[in-house]
View 1 (cartoon, helix red, strand yellow):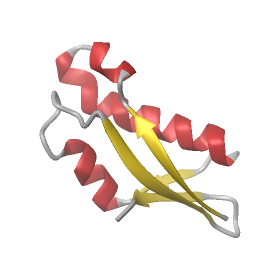
View 2 (tube, rainbow, N blue to C red):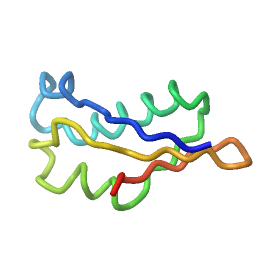
View 3 (cartoon, rainbow, N blue to C red):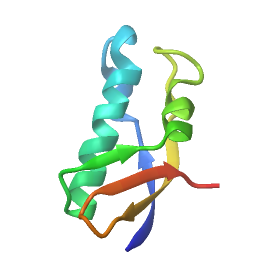
Length: 81
């Protein structure tokens, strides 16, 4: 199963500046786990680099991601091209 989501990081902007990128990664994992009904979420390297591209303080406001559910129940999340 494969789905495309637009994940907004608007709520993360209210956290302390030095914790934003790490919290965005945790938020993305929770978002995908909730929507794809799986506890095992793997974030692709390209998506991780897109979250951290401008540093820990300036995360993107939203990202378009592709979530693919594998046969074993895990989910692989990558950046939508």
